[in-house]
Image 1 (spheres, helix red, strand yellow):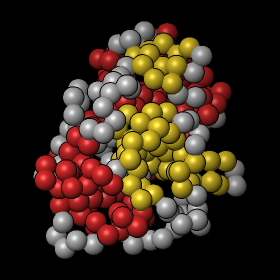
Image 2 (cartoon, rainbow, N blue to C red):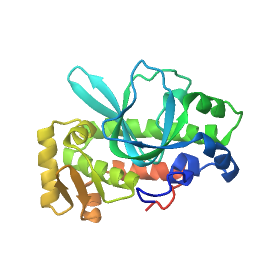
Image 3 (cartoon, one colour):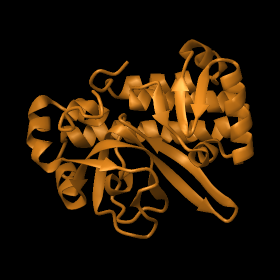
Length: 243
């Protein structure tokens, strides 16, 4: 699936791909293709969630705003859905959701979404239960990874996960977001990205990352990358044309 691709193809999102075809067909009219731009805020703390989003080729960050800055607590790509508080029965989120990498997704009105998950034993509800478990796994790994692994390892892991979510070895990623993802300062991001570039694994130029040597990047990444990829593949099927 390319950026000009069929933005109506629900199979490009793992949650929707896991649904039986009749249910996907029934949901299709309620899902509107939308493009999100970098730094666009989708959800704000304390404000009602008016829509949920199923990413196709777009990446969202869930951010915690602290006194000393902003830290990413979770990332949402084509493996999931942005708006889990609505699924869990919460009207307003406690964290901010922002577009990290611009691209296309599918938008569903929050009231419509709540109606759909109210269906007893519905496939969407069951699939989102599995995705919720994956998000717990991701956040637990993030906390442990930030404490136990070197910045270079964590950077390699995040770049690989982003490439997987975008289905491309080339994507735009600002130093600001990379610093939030890694919980480090921008100067550290420059040093680590420079080291990966010097090793021939990536090219980082004018805010664009190009993965040149995926095998080398995987060798540099911490074990969390493989663990999270395995968790996603176990709980949710790969999206359409996933690598």
